[in-house]
Image (cartoon, rainbow, N blue to C red; front, side, top):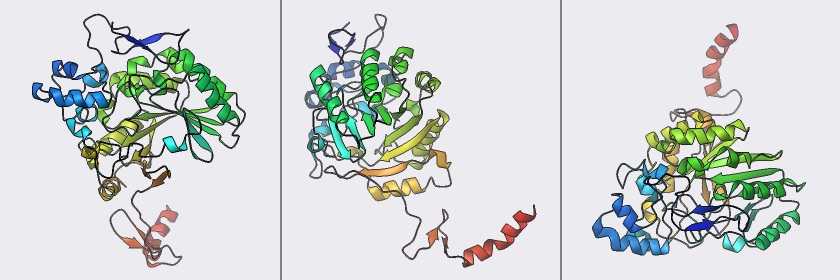
Length: 383
């Protein structure tokens, strides 16, 4: 077993091996965390070692066994998300170290307050897997970023002093990297505040490291408040049988599931890939919630899909998939100005509407389109 790292439970609680080996028999594959491990796994070449080592020196690397097992080639939709690339060391002119303004909107450490009625709480900055397109890539990593007891108390005091904040989003890092005891305690403190009506947890654990989501960790999320789990997944193949078991533990507690994804070049930038992803979510009783436009974090340009292309992709699914599988396509305006919907428009400047086949129809009473439908409507009434 490798070195260990606490996740907000020191001194009383358990620790997590940073190589991901907790509970694994000797000889089983572990989390891949550096260039040599990636080379041994056949995910990079000897010629790329120097570039990958330079990349890992700047941005964290972690590929847990569940994700490693899904990578068929380094540039497939799974490998592309997690295997580091030397291009990450090149920052495009439009990219920002803090693309959505978290730092400027943080009143106390661990809290981000962007909207009037809700705020983020980031109890740690550890993730089970480090995405190569992460908008917080300058902050997350195995060093932990765990809030101390004093820092956490300061954060709780901030929430208690702001009664207009009715929703708390636990993010990071990944809140499900906390121990069950620590997670339970945070949720209990927030639930005890009368004005906190909703708690939202954003996590990749159910798909990236599903064995971590034990019955004990799931039970730690139990509360009488409205609590939602938002799962980050970008490709249908991430929904493995192990992920299905992890999600079943959550559903058994009556916790509703939402799914969020990022539109990524080479991962899900086709109608077929998006349809498969959204249908997979629905099959696990998970409502696709957001499809994010890529945030312009440093070194992520290889994943960029233009907004107009994204709108066209999403429009191609209208009528092709159920509304249950239709997310809101959003842009988090750089600089901290918040999310706005950027999906396809069907209402025209003159007030008419466009149908999914391109036909234009008036919305005025007695319009030509409605008159054309009268025979069919009358026939339906007679049935």
